[in-house]
Length: 323
Ligand SMILES: [Zn+2]
Ligand SMILES: [Zn+2]
Ligand SMILES: [Zn+2]
Ligand SMILES: [Zn+2]
Image (cartoon, rainbow, N blue to C red; front, side):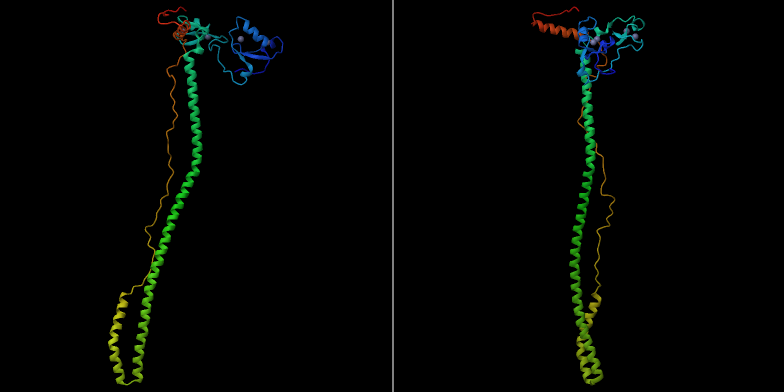
């Protein structure tokens, strides 16, 4: 990464001059003013250098590419060995690549890198992964929000469930109250009838007893005899009725018969549901691991371009190309 973005021309400031830098040379890792840019473009050694507009550079970051050999201090990685598929410096060649056939200058090896499929595949793969990760992240965030929202909706569901249960129990209670009232009326009516009959009998029996008592004390024997004879017919009916009443009468009581003791273990539980998502990730080209200079591809591209340029028909064919 460049250490700072101060806008002074570094080339001029070495000469003690202060000039506003407009461009950044990524090959020299240096900021340059207008004059130095012109010189840079003319000079044979630097005219192929990449000059970046400083204003646009301030908005993005310049990646830090390691251009120096890790085995030889301060020596640039200027070569590429095809056998070892590795970059190296000039000092590496005698020690490690002496017998290697294809050791190319790095600028030769990298000549078509910007239009190569190696670049294309890798770049597309990064984009592909980037998109997938963004989808995943969005999905995770959505999931977090959905989870948070579900808390209140589940609580509401449980509340509704409870309310319905209570409503049902209330309905049952109302029905039992009506049944109770009906049964009560029926039983009270029955007891009232029995009570009335018993009171009548009671008065009647009391009167008969008083008649006998009176005649025993104040009446003649004849009178008492006649009264007893007359009462004798009726007393059997009363005896029979009282017998019936004492045998058939049962004390009435109402009680609440529960369906069963309601023994609720729980009213439900929370379960975790895992759902499949629709994010798919398939690597663009997994086998593209090495960055080889693409000689064949380059030739074919060139051949195609030439063919198109010349607008050749089937009559004419380019079969050989000399490079
Ligand atoms: Zn300058
Ligand atoms: Zn330069
Ligand atoms: Zn080296
Ligand atoms: Zn080698």
